[in-house]
Amino acid sequence: MNCLIRIACIVFLFSAANLVFAADISDKEQENNKQDVIHLQLDENVQKNPVIPDEKEDKAAKNLERSENNIDTIDEDNVDLQEVEDELPENNAEMNKGFPMQGGLDNIFDKNRDNKIDEDTLFGKIMHKDITRTDVPTYLLREELTFTPKKGPIGKVQFFGAYQGGMISGWEGADYDYNYHSGFEELGVIGNFRHTKNDFKLMVKPIPQSDLNFFQSFIGDAYIVNSSIPHHKIVMGYSRNQIGKEGGSSSYILPFVTRSQIARTFGNNRALGVRLVGNYSLIDYNFALNSSDRYFRRWFPGAEFTGWVDVKPFGKTDGRFGRLIIGGGLNAGHNEIDYAVGSFYVGYKYKKLWTNFEYAIADGYNGFEVSADKAAGFNYTIGYKIIPQLQLIARYDVFDPNRDVANNQRTEYTAGINYFIKGQALRLILNYVYCQNDAMPDSHRIIFATQILI
Image (cartoon, rainbow, N blue to C red; front, side, top):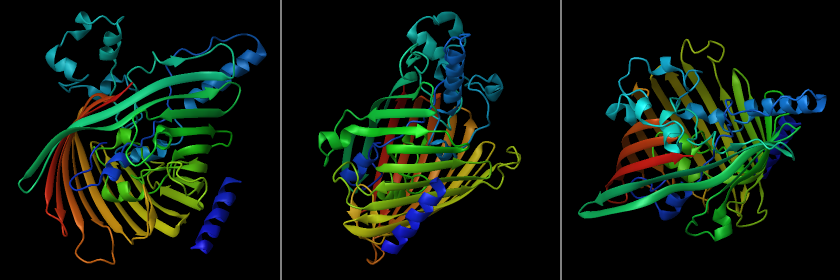
């Protein structure tokens, strides 16, 4: 393992030059689902700094314009987990043409909403937003919470908030329970520095998690992104760890309320370190050298390498044959024990249909907690958009928590519906989960959740 870590470090240096989980998921796993990442994405339509004839100010304006186009930094690689939609602006009416539910629930009840809701009010501005894309997060108050200081080191900032919560009813045999549980609650700011190619993000989670003190659970993201190298971004600080495709993806674009079993067990965490993210038409990659610590429990218990590569065979076909992604990665390091997790992913989207498959195997792992267990699992997901606002989804998810122990496999069958009132910014989610346990009684969950991004 030590040899593996050294090799991984060499590779890196060379390259750089929500809720309750379905069925019988532990509280710690439930709290781990609260981790999320927001795409660093500022609206191109937000008013830019006025152009000043002075050469220095003109250069600053150009740098700011560059930052606005690049501020959707480190998580764009993960949007293919769910689906990648056509490169159409959010206000493109052709995307919804012919669909009776265009524009969200408001159109169902009031065809003349534009004549009845004042656009000058905050509510009116939200209701008149025509958000159709669901492969990236969009914020309801993005324009209202984006500011461009005229002086100082900050070129542009956007404040944001995010919340997902839901009602859960579950039963196991004759036992029935009903409760409300919050998935994630986040507040933060993203922006860029004037006259530089550096962006930044700071996000906090004000509601504490169990088994962590306030400081450990308070910090969500804290990093700087440098975009000086073409097609690359260097991420320095505390950010999401790309352990598996779904395990390293933003919670805001996940099709289900909960992650798959391999994603919530091996991944869905953050680490302190340096990452190199590359993006090309045919290949993407993400290499990181981190501390193996999780949630600031210990300063530096050991080194960790996390690497992921996606190959895009149809990357130069303009989507004529759909979008195919074949990826794989490794997470290896030392934290009390030596651990290694290998992952493999295939995802494909064609028009309204998308599907993906992911497999992972671990010889020890470092998720929410460190474990020496030899675990493995896979899942298959399929989704179809009946109309741009309504999506049907299903997942088959198998997990073996310890390959050295017989008859302990867990299988989850999940079906769901997503209704995108305003893209991912305002979304309704309905999931049904049946969990079949070899070692425990079978169980069921019905989850109705709402998601709002402001």
